Image (cartoon, rainbow, N blue to C red; front, side, top):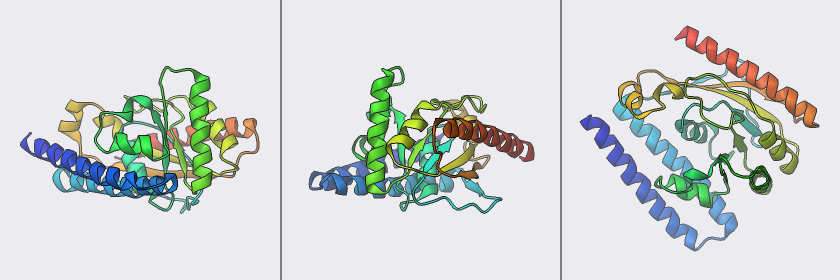
Length: 253
């Protein structure tokens, strides 16, 4: 418990320091500079946090890419969603060259040191979980256009919420369609994440975190969908493949 407390204290302190430095730099930056500053500091923050987890808790990310697929520098990334850690893991995995921007719930815009600041200032999309669909799609479209302008990769979890038991839920089409319609023709990278659901609550996090690897697998790269039917079929196929890979990964552990 003492080690957990020390880790939390160090992480919070580092995040507060990063937020302070980033906020100062953003004061004198235009919108373009703010976007790229946030992308840069997100990489720094993610690597610091994941590095501390590795040192103190043995946390490790295992990347699977059996087909040797190359994620394009500009694409839409879709993934299943198990934990808040998914965002940190994907930031580090996708790298600064792709500048991943996330569709996230609006409740995260305040309360988390550094993370909330970058979500507000870095060109991400924050939507109310139970807000009006029209407002949500307007924000998604806005992010898609920013990503197209700045050469960034939009990232969305089509399930719309975290899976508490690791089951891959239904993939919804609305957000994906809006990102592709507003952000230009983009290929789609489907990624499977496994491990977050085991540490989704505080007690499991304290007991189990770091004991099993967090797995990232590149499942498939889809050509840019041409219409809504292509998008629907792509999501059905991506969900099926992601679920199959997750079940296989669990069987092998």
